[in-house]
Structure formats: structure tokens, C-alpha cells
Length: 148
Image 1 (spheres, one colour):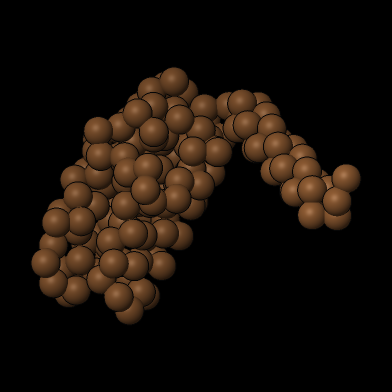
Image 2 (cartoon, rainbow, N blue to C red):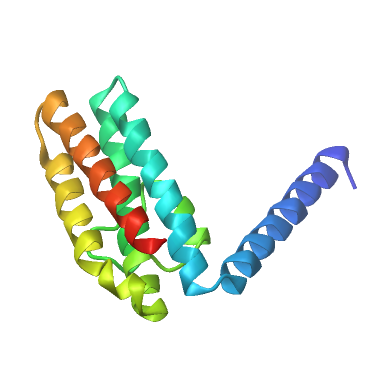
């Protein structure tokens, strides 16, 4: 067996272990914990989108927020954009429904965040796109208060 083949096999093995570990971690999280982790990541993405210098980067950050909110089955989920939240749960709105209680009370805020983010995705100027990212951050911060 050549060194190149061994390296390739090793890389595949490491990748498989990482995938199984990620899937196991996501499966072991409660819906409540999943919402919290996805919320933190979405908030970070909305802040990063505001700092981006290129329109595409701002919109990518906004799309990551949408992906976190809706999950992979959501109507506005974009598989072309990396989805770290996919390893944390099924999407904030899906996990909030599963968690119930105070998480269900946050549903209107999750929906509002999605609406604002979609406005940002459709915006044609950098100013409007960044304004939507800022508004998304503000709504996400409100959600954080509801989830405590």
C-alpha cells in the first residue's frame, strides 16, 4: 500500500470519526440545549454580517441565521451555505416547538427574525443589507432574554 493511499485512508477515517462524533453530540442534546446553542451561533453570525466588507459576505451571514432558525427542512434553508447549526439541532423553530414552554413563547420572535433576515437577503444596497443584519441581531438579543 502506497503512502498516498495510507494518507487518504487515514483522512477518510478521521473524517468518519468526526462525522459520527458530531451526529452523536447533536443527538444527545435536548431541544432546549439545541435552541440555546443555535441561538448563540445565529447571534454571532448576525454580528459578523454587520462587520463584513462585501455584500456577498453580509448576505452569507444572514443566510446562516436563516439556516439556524429554520433548520434543514425550512423553506428558506440554503444548502449552499455552511450550516453549523445543522450539527446542533433541527433548527431553532423546530427545536423550540419540541421543547415547549418558554421556548414556544419565543416563536413569534423566531418568525420575526426570519422575516427581517429575508428582507436583508433581498436588499440591493450594502446599507439596507447591514441594517437588516443589525435588526436581526436586536431581535435575537430579545429572544435571548426570553430564553433565560
